[in-house]
Image 1 (cartoon, rainbow, N blue to C red):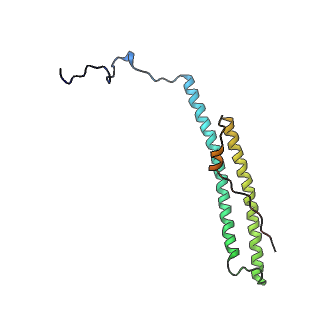
Image 2: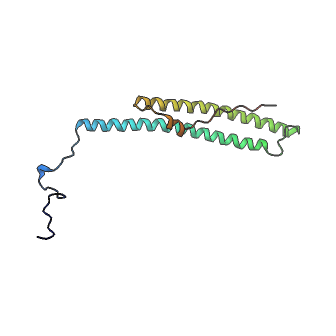
Image 3: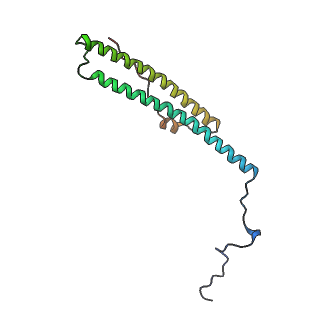
Length: 146
């Protein structure tokens, strides 16, 4: 007959004996659980690093805002009187925030170290992309108080 396809290719056998069963073995289940746990551990380590980096950004933004105030007109330390005292208070406040930033930065470095150690423990040896992605800013220097 014309157009009739007699080739068994493309046909699905209806026999139950030829059906492929996808039952998971105990080993498959264990491997799956181990993989899920590895993912969870890496996720927790990276989330803690992200939280540390986010707190750095918040402190850095506050420092930037105070630096803008410091450079604004009316905060000239050479004027004397209230402007000079305001200038000194701003510098003191900025230096406190710089100390907070540097402490938060040390914590972020510790979190980066923990993430790398976790990756090493799980057999992951290349960390360059991690260090590029989770860039930790340099330490800040205190302002000179006059």
